[in-house]
Image (cartoon, rainbow, N blue to C red):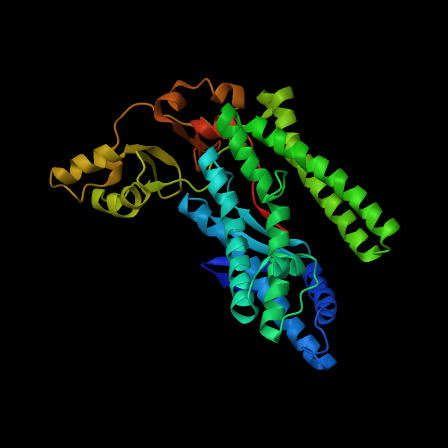
Length: 388
């Protein structure tokens, strides 16, 4: 993560920021200072102080949005490698993509839910201080609202930007969260994640084209060069990411046999050391993770076998909690696949169909991951989340 600022950790997840984010902070402070009327900010110093508060609250809401994704992902067993802040918003870098429409929907929707909460809180503050009606909402939506106090003015600005972020981010186009929600819906309806990805990626391209038109209009008709350039930059970003999302789908259609197991496996599988006792296996692996089986590894990470949860429970019920996991393995061939096995062969594997997932090993027999039947069918999925 060279070239990035490390801002700390939250819930064990690193928060980093690109240098474009610092530039955005300074630009935002400059622009925000001009939002406050003289009655609220009679001096330039107070205007900038209020701008600092607005930007700080917006960043808090932004981080909250990304951790909405991160914490919901964690509930599904997906870890977040880092949360990255940048000029257009933030990104939660997830360790893997969703394995079901349900995972995709809830992880994608969790971020906008936090944004909605931030907007509601800001609206409540405005209502408490100045009252809230349709005229107030119209004034906030057109940036014509001037609160009676600094508090209500700040809340009105936050409500405008959080509301704008929520509406835009829920558009059904990748890489926006709305695109991931749309993807999950199409996936659920058709049973094919690739169709959901293709739909949302195409919508992303349409949105990018619309933003290019908006950029031209902003410059030509309103003379707002800065806003036009921002719209153009956003269009480029959305087009690039929508195109990137569509490429794996197109490749799978053209040549699914080129996708190896290593591209679809979970790189953080549940495992048990061969020297762990039945009691330790239950306490540290089967109990917390509620899996039907786990791989057993030797001291060098080599695959020894597959240990069913039922086998561990039987051993505990028999009053033998100290039996090593390695002794609970049955003889014979251990079901597994090489990391370079191709997708069309993987989907035909009878052990994959029987067990629902298979250990993936490298040429030395060292475990490198586990591939599930569902992940194999999905092949490659779009990862991460975006909030602008």
